Image (cartoon, rainbow, N blue to C red; front, side, top):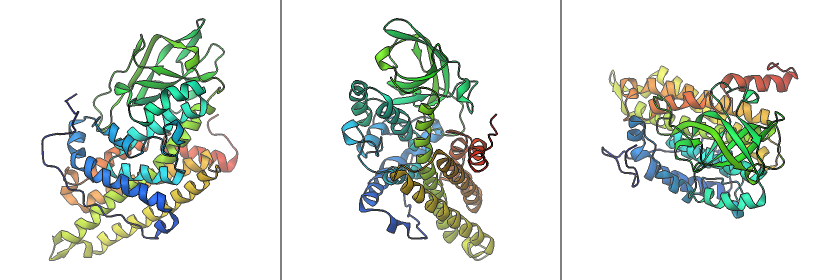
Length: 404
């Protein structure tokens, strides 16, 4: 990977002229703290992400220098307690932060989402007090980078079929197996890993990357999330001290609770990608002249734009209501699945329509639509595929389990 310590790359830095769109004045439903958090992250994205993201995506390189900046703006675990390295904010604040990050790039939001929801959250919820104090402050400050090991090469939508396992060895467990499609893994200092014990129970544990037998090869050749670093996790007789294994949680409930937290953030984040595409398409439609008038004056273009802002507004209301329920501890995994599925599909549709409005220019890096479109193809699949979330809703409304 090229030297990225100072975040500089060759080429022309892009100026971010994004304007926020709030057709139903949903900002009136947000608190001052929500708006301040959003503005801080939006400013950071305009200054630090937009000027470089197209080049990093083109080169398929991760701007790892941004990890520190993400920590400084409070993007790692914003709704976790301050004493455990979080931001002490509520779930809506977490949502609006994820929205602004994904407006910059889905990969940047993934970097933060994994660190906060899939690494810090399970440690906060399931680890011993000693482990919380050891790891969480360093994760919150960006000194440590983490990753989350659940998906395996042969077990994605069916994580219960995992074959990664631990065997008792006195004061430690011996960990063997492999995980696949792991965001941040090649640069991670630690991994929250889920494996089956000798009784077949799924256990969670904290595994440090420097331990013997641990490797994290990078996955190359991605056409999506190209500015996010993705890899494997390979465990070859890794010795995990028993104090690093979560003491009380057993079964899929543990990892699925983390996924609910991450999926909630995605439901907000995808709106950011949609807003960026809509904003770019709206501006382009007002500036691009064909047949003697701006293309935004043509009925078919207005149809596209009107439908875009309608779908964005519906998604904004869905996310806000979900956040309100989450603040009361009442958001169910099924409700989160509905919002994740709807909002990501909405954003992908808008990215495609926005690309059409830009015409041929829409496939270039001068505009963000094609990059967002490619990224969202991954977001549609990870943290539960589009179809799996549909079946989760189906199970919830019928009581009949399509997975069995």
